[in-house]
Length: 501
Image (cartoon, rainbow, N blue to C red; front, side, top):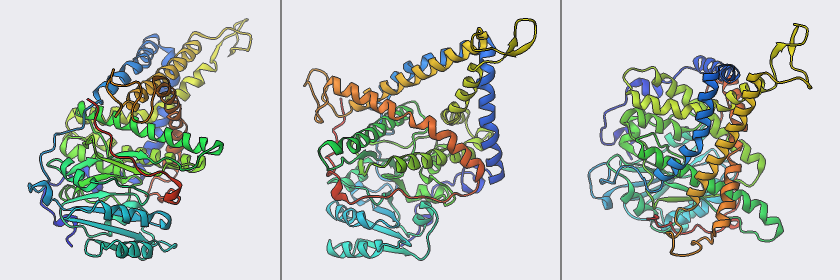
């Protein structure tokens, strides 16, 4: 089968927007050290100026209003209207390749092959890339393909030694021209998935399925914690989907999200192929696409992908750390050079830089916290020193404490507002029923919104650690997979939610 490069030609992106033009490892390291230090300095110095303190306070107070605006904009925005498949052929003729990189995924690979057989819709192909598994993943995938009579539509590509990254594994698979759907090995598909992919992709063949979390199958007292973690992660993905739709409505760079990523082979070839040196290839491809086209990744309202939630706190933190590190690496490798590239329209640069600056907020908060602890001031008798426990705080230290409190309240309330709005997706319109399909009463929806808002508090904790990891190892990092359990430990996926009107 032909490679992505052999697909229909699309104007290649400039070198500085593709893998060949990304920032070098030494430059990434310098940025990973200097930018957090600059953010700490800004946070520390800000309260010393009344004008800066007022500006920071106004920005913090505006966060809930901004969250409400994003929630409203993201209610129905899905991106550019579908205009047919990338080749110009009718949707039923679009070739769809389900591409699954898998390493040591014996517990789940058979169920995914079964799902692919259930949603088969020609022309379609399933390719499982066995990335040097040690647990027989490739053999199990091949047996499942034979069992479900997918021999003419599915294959297993075996890699002799570990590829080192998800993108490297993806590069090992020869893909026919058309549309590629990247699936994690634990993904679950609902009936009609392939047909919905065909009808959802626009002229570019680019889209992202909304990620949904399966529910743990256990019941009783011991099941409340796994279920709470699953619901929190599902709510987090709902919030992420709302934000992405709002960015689309504003013409921003809504991103791919790995599992359920849909991309045309012609677009993939134009963007330089899979970025093998990236920790999060989905984020880097999304940024290249936005720099190349000025458009974000559409979010079709009825395209969903189900996956297992992470039920171990340790694995959950490791996963979030990987995502944060991948985002920071993408920003330093691609966004920072693009911000100084005069060929990139100013609006695109502003959108990317504004979104990337969120990763520095914990460092600015650290600077505020250092200022809030007190600062050198005149003590009785004219000597200089720090304010004592019984002394009066300096004006700038008091301002720093107020700003910290305002930031915490502003971002906390903003997270709850977004969660409340996102959890309403798919529920009946006002006045039609007291509860929705999932049994949400207003009170339970509010409780879940607060829990999801609290769950997002993980990010300020993992972002500084991710910055430190990038500074310590600026080169290509080693991908560490999240372990998966047997599909029998989770519920079956639910049918797609109808879009709310």
